Image (cartoon, rainbow, N blue to C red; front, top):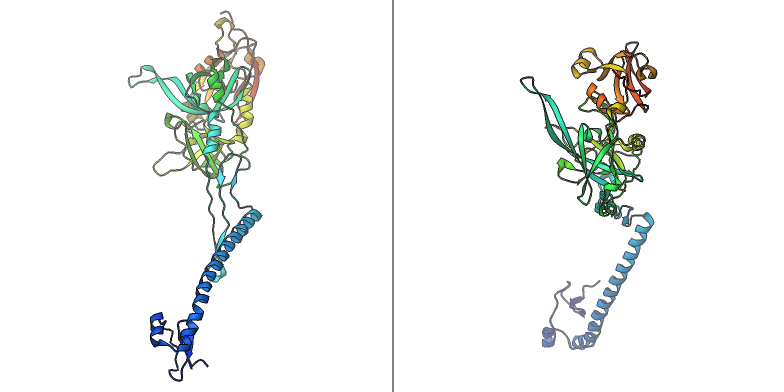
Length: 450
């Protein structure tokens, strides 16, 4: 129906021939040189102003429409984000989580793929909890026998971590692992401001590998007291696999460091080097030597575990363990309430049990399937031990909650107890072929004159 029209630029002319469409644009010069009819020239001249005005109008309309589209698109995006709760949020720890809307794209079979981006910044949380973290130096003396059978002793230094968990009118209380402070002759605590002070062991629970140490408040300067804080304990019972965690501790004795990861496993059974078995949180956050006693935290900065152990080996990597805080909290509270014993009593005032004992060494324990501790060979008639219900054959494994593995350890512990004081003695007793655990209350007596 358009075969009689030839298109040239924006104008159309009639033609009796050439039944095709000519979309070639002709220049103004061609038109002025006879490229079109007189009528067409007049028409072109009439249209030029209208064309310029139309072009500018189209530009303005396009710009206006673009601005309106951008404005309404932004408002719509904000409304969708607000309605779905996916706007960036700052949690209580100060970490920022950015959660853009889920983007979907059609896939084969009508399925959709989703892209989610999450950004976490834990620096504010770490800054908040770091004042509650401490480094621990354990000075000890190791003893043994050399190749020729001669006994020897030599000083040693170990490092670990701790968490400030409480403060009384007289003491600052710090929780750590028992193996961090075991066999110590002196303990040195370093706080966030790099100031160091001496501490003493307040109480231990060897089975749970927990210990509480105390620093006298009178020994702390004002700057240190202003710099430190008490950690917030969380709940480890509600942890989920994959939940993000942060580990802080004195790794390798170099000072406090921070690592992060996730909860890899819960209720993981593990046997430690001393043969005890415990239930732990497993994490892939790096926990190295020196991290023991440090904190495993959730993203809110709450302590949900106490770093305890790591499996080393060429075929194992990324397996750290922490004592669940929900299981540790009752024990920590009990240890915090114990009397701090810093001074040994005079020998004449030292408490007396009234037993003859022999250590159950590793060799004896393995040979006769006995618990490691101190075996009671004889009970003195009328003694404190007899009154407490200790029998011949019992194996003392704890005194006042502290693990006892030798007669020397028991004698050293008794140096802090006066005659007349009461303590708890934990024994293993053979009943019907099996060892049962009993906690007995003993009121210490006076040592006989002879």
